[in-house]
Image 1 (cartoon, helix red, strand yellow):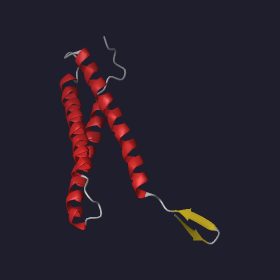
Image 2 (tube, rainbow, N blue to C red; image 1 turned 90 degrees about the vertical axis):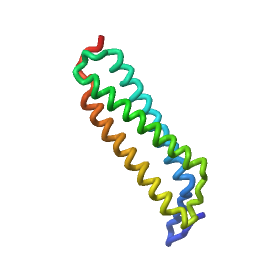
Image 3 (cartoon, helix red, strand yellow; image 1 turned 180 degrees about the vertical axis):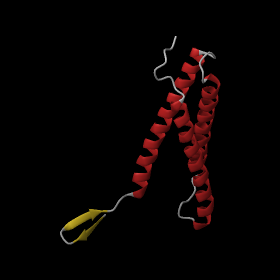
Image 4 (tube, rainbow, N blue to C red; image 1 turned 135 degrees about the vertical axis):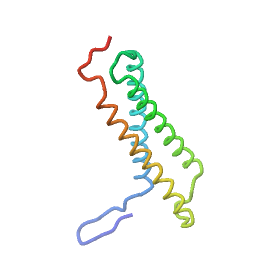
Length: 126
């Protein structure tokens, strides 16, 4: 499908295709963050309790991983329910669920900022 305006031809954006590509890219980033957090947790456990920020990092990494699993599970449940986005009656519920997921993702990012700040840069690992 395209629209002609003067000499220019514009193609309509296939919203479903765009959303699918965006979701796939976001899922890959989510998996990468989960793997990074798991690796960081392994490193913290390996270094042991003598590291200055041992307990805070254990707590923050565990919380981040938990939030990522909750958000991922929520998205999976939403996908399996196959809500009809054109059904106006479902818009309020879908909007609410989207807002909850956005808040969880925001807190995950915030937690990971603190994890990075407490990380091992410049420290030797035995």
